[in-house]
Image: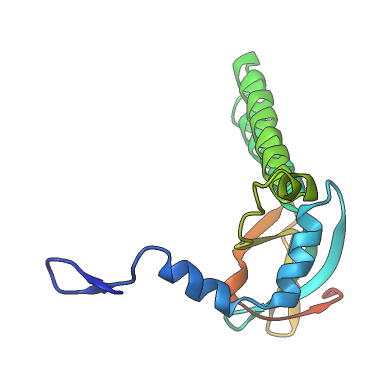
Length: 166
């Protein structure tokens, strides 16, 4: 049932928007993401269409995503300052994100499901080394730090296995 606020605008009931979002997700892509989320280091070349934008990269699981994100943030700390404090901060950030990745991956494993905890709904997918098709050129950022992309699974319009080169 929809609710109205004081201004009279309509808002979806709690949980209803999540149900609608899940209904828009491609079940096959969701299954591929699920397989990646259960792995610590697997990857799969994929091309996505997201709101008319064509992009590709390596589909990775949640653990690898957070580990790479932590490394990227850690490198940012190291480059911001050469002090010992920034090196310690960088290491702490990397360790924190690696732990987040391990915990997130554990939630998607069969062991978690066997303990009766059930698997969380898959709402995001993760790419390593993302590339975007702009006109007839494939653009990718040259970066000394790992580049990762996170997007809503429900926003993907289509996909194919493979990669964009150029």
